[in-house]
Image (cartoon, rainbow, N blue to C red; front, top):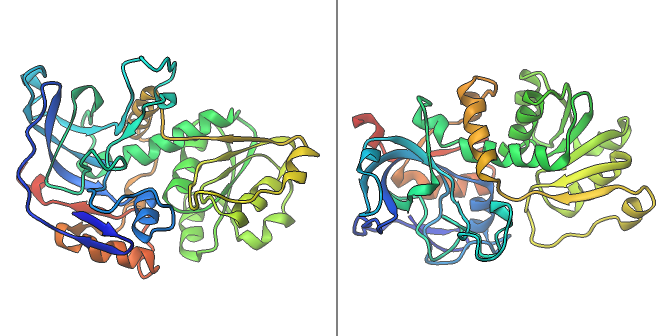
Length: 331
């Protein structure tokens, strides 16, 4: 599936990739449409380049290996951590702080997972350990949430607000609860997403009513636009922390007075460490997260372009849409 520019996608036939010596070839089962893919598709974020193949939330099985990779990996059911850091030459101490970080399906030079096959470095593989292919494709967004919760320094007993009840917002709520937070409120304009969050036991509100609520200890902006930034910053106590996760726009305005005078802390969270990615897998494996309910109706390969269009126009409101290649039915 090739991205041609804002609101344009086409499907073309290509040769099956040949894995490099340190790579493996994955037969793709499912790939999720990420919010960042959608923002790239519409052209709002500028984070996707015409001519590239997107897709970084995926699952499948190893069907071939490069000359330096273990042949015993063949047949292994896996997902992959799409963040590729250097071997340490840049001096980074944490994987996602690498100055040369590349993300599969985001970097235009690396083919993404909206395809039947994808080659990835063997050290990026994460075994599913019995998790279904569908849930395996959801490990990546849960890893984003694990990283954000850790970056915030969240402590059990603290109250939190999450601006945005899309996939990442819902994932943050679940991870926060799994890590001991019992007071979680999601601010979301879409009633169906509020209803879903409420069905899982989370508090919900609409964006216009956030200012009426008691101040929160910490908050997460899972949208990333001017309105959510302002509301989220103003909603926390003096000395509180807002963690920005969403990248709805490449640049936004923030209420500087509210930050400086109240000594509020503003931090960012991007991607995840290797350990956070595996922690997300393990939380799913231990049934500490409700994942299946997040997934809407699958789409086949030919329906991906329509799914992108419908999500962009809000004709579809699924929290997570997965592309199915159909290959898992034979494996």
